[in-house]
Image (cartoon, rainbow, N blue to C red; front, side, top):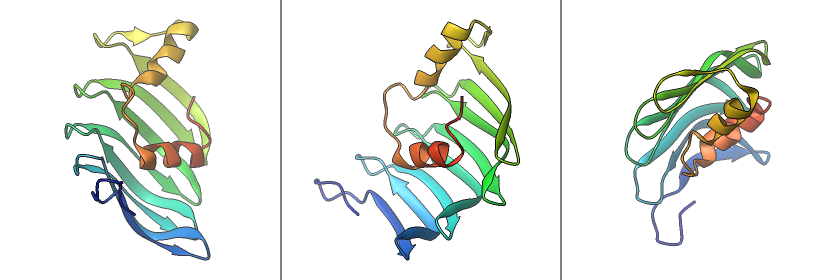
Length: 136
């Protein structure tokens, strides 16, 4: 698939209408947006996504069809903003930091940290978060 400008948006294979094998996505400017592997439409193994400026935006892994271990999310400046820990696909721990690196404990401020992507869309990261059960 490509953007209207002709820049490649994603590359991967569908089997029976579901993603299968290695997938890669790119931002509109052509910089790499993410890489992940799928089997029978479900993410498997490690994934990594990047902001358009090249800073890592997220990483984590999937095992047995669900999110497993730590998913870490960073802002465009490279600051860690959120950590979500999964066990067998279930969220067991969440932690967030503000732009100054201070841990966020207030529930309202925690919700605000979900804007860590700074309004920069990343279709692969969005897909993976939805498949992980919507990290909260």
